[in-house]
Length: 529
Image 1: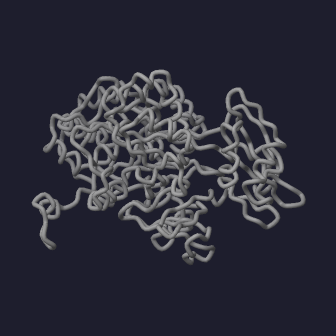
Image 2: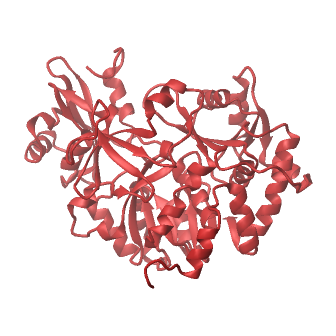
């Protein structure tokens, strides 16, 4: 094609106003793909046309219960088609959905409900007692709607017209786990959720193209961006979302047989899938992309996964709740079965996102220097709910401060060294646990490793490694320390080793270093020395 000319499809898209809200997408796909499945769970499906009508009824039901634009509603339960119907529909009218982690204790649930001022909480099956307990501990609890009650009210409602929310209206509030104190509610708008679609498409990255017959698996928890975000991806792309209550290896293998073409999974869960006895007999040839995050993929696991899912491209996704998910990607072509330097990175900025590594005064550092990773993107959250100071400290001059210590190479690939707050300062030297963990991980007896800082009267903090042994292996602390000495500087080598049975993790699969640290810092005012 000659320079300056556009293809007809490109021209028509340029003339279209970009869709930046749930209301726009639901109307669009109901018109374009009315009979295609939008949401599916356990064999029950809803087409885009049916979703358009049903979501109008949900809006009417919400309005009848006093919910207005800007109000918060909550969901307590596992992943559910019902949750996504409620979320999409509330977003159409500008009510804000707050999914609450179902593994939380009643006081934690009560805190989130109180913080949001939610008018209404929808409760998934099996969580009625937990919701009642949490609400009983509150001075002004929300109204409670069980799944059968909500379903009956929706069926009885009328599919009326309503005033749709705009791109900059808040529609989702996700609570970040945080390492200290109470969780913070990250407020996300329609624009945050959908703004990076067009730059990705314009860059013509293969994984940004979705065929009409594709399907995506939603099995990560909906209280996390890795769960709800997949539903958003399906809606923006007009494809089928297959929803499962929670991750199980069998469930993922079932989904392969149901025709999923994409999934997001954490490496620990991927390992369970590819090592499952059924994996050898399950047809996975339809899978186009495996997206993974929360941790880099060990080389041995990548080799095993590529053997098991041979036609899939693997993408490491780096992001956080406050950036509405992925802001950097390590693409398939950088995954090397022999191993390479780039596989130690989190990839490079996705189209539409700017990344920088900055020093303590906010100045951009030279390539190769370790500082804090910051992000400028239309997907950066609007704010932390009711926390202006925390918002101001995290969002400065349009840049989201990730709290991750990182450096960037000459080609723009980002190498995460650690959470800034997990950094260990031993004898004035900065020690990034992830670097030490990487050195230890290659030891033949080590299954999992987490490195923490513990109090030390001489050095301030001492490096400690917590190890889960591989099945059938024994850990010899002295030989492991000698192994590590050969691979990292002396001040980074663990002074002590704890052998533990199981690694503590949160719902999205991340190792909870704070839980490993807690016993050693009990009774101290500060968590650094």
